[in-house]
Image 1 (tube, rainbow, N blue to C red):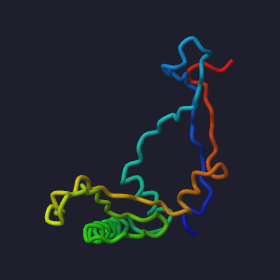
Image 2: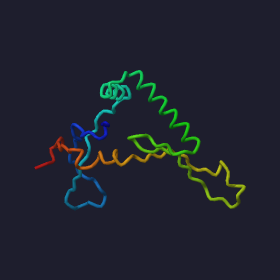
Image 3: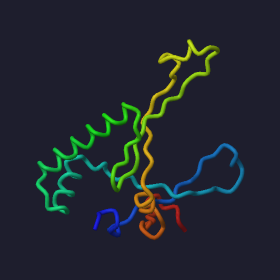
Image 4: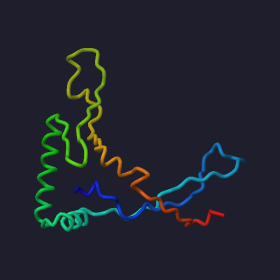
Length: 144
């Protein structure tokens, strides 16, 4: 069973905050939920967790991770879309200028290069209402 198919433990903490929008002048206040930011999880913590869950030595995971990212880089820069199991698809997207002649359409007409990531449906579904509990904390004392 993959980690992604297991139900998450915990919840996302949020708090109500006042919305400050220019068009609300003189109107009743509005509120929205804002996420309580958690500390970023470091790579070593992810490796340690995955090592423990999979009963695999950390060194093996580090080597596998390096090989996986080398493969992603290699195939992406050679024009392939790379499907990573349980995660999604990585690809390079190029945005190019429109030119008057075919001769002008060269590597200098590429305006933007970026990596695109499209998560697998299973990963996207982890964000559904059924999988993530929202805990609302009134840390600003706005609820009455």
